Image (cartoon, rainbow, N blue to C red; front, side):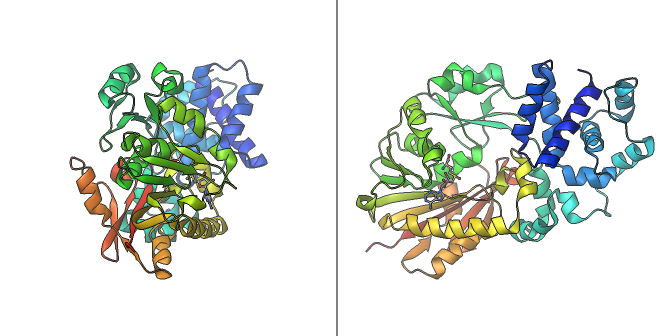
Length: 432
Ligand SMILES: C[S@@+](CC[C@H](N)C(=O)[O-])C[C@H]1O[C@@H](n2cnc3c(N)ncnc32)[C@H](O)[C@@H]1O
């Protein structure tokens, strides 16, 4: 396919998503099924264009002065470094190409990268209602922070130290461009996609199939590392889902912890057994309705990787950004309070409770910790900044810290840490 056909296809997918309110992955898959002639290069180029528009839809609309999807895709192509002349030449005479925006409109688009006339929410590429919560959460640089959440993400991997060193995995994956991560001592990174390419399918690699590494954002790795799993401890991963944190915690303890994993959703938990087996990690998996009473008040560490809006993962799931509503945010906050309350019952006297989200919104993060503490005594906020310095002595202080009581809680962001957005707080329960 030529560029014009790819632009038309990306616009068609965006039209389909809007008309039928469908997730991006489903719309792209359907397009592929009904256009079997398109090769893998075409599919990845079209996917990149669709995702680029979704990430920066609002700023593209403001700069292009248009809501027409084809115009926005043209904008994304121009932003990727194609000059106006090259774009015009590429689509000239191509009967599949949608009408090219006028030369004036393209000129204005290129001139208006950060026009002061644009609304802050448009500059930040977020819905209007999120401007105030993001500013309250991320401070004066919130627009830059939000823009960093609109960029293409890297592909992060975690070396499974139960089976191989990071250097060994790095050597195996060097042909794929994997490099040691900046912050996580377990991490490897494949840089964000440039141009039309796609990330390698690392799941077909021998190293993945044999459990030498997992796919895990560096922020998620750091949250697991800061939680501080140690050999001999009794640990409960209370929102284990498919087990991303469980595997990292088990590896951090050298598989020497008494590890338990629970999730309220059987479906989400389903992949955990295969993943544990592949990684050579051991955990007792508890399904909903299992009797957990034997674990109450008995855990040295309980990890709550709470259900959240996922605002920290907008680089990977940009359609979620536009779908999120205030009502959903409030619903998540209620779930977070509930899950914190439930999980806290398992912490032993002198034990710790790690609260993690992949959101950057303060309401889901520090405010939930404050609310938890407001109605309870016998809990203290640990100084997470000090934990970072202790556990990551080589790493820069790549986070936003906030004081609560005499401790501190941390927010990681793409702009500050180069990771997905993550929140980390650690509480200790007074010894009884
Ligand atoms: C962010 S996801 C967990 C991701 C997982 N820890 C990982 O690293 O792959 C949040 C999980 O919390 C679970 N959850 C929601 N409410 C819960 C509750 N009340 N008790 C336990 N798990 C709950 C959801 O089913 C979901 O799997």
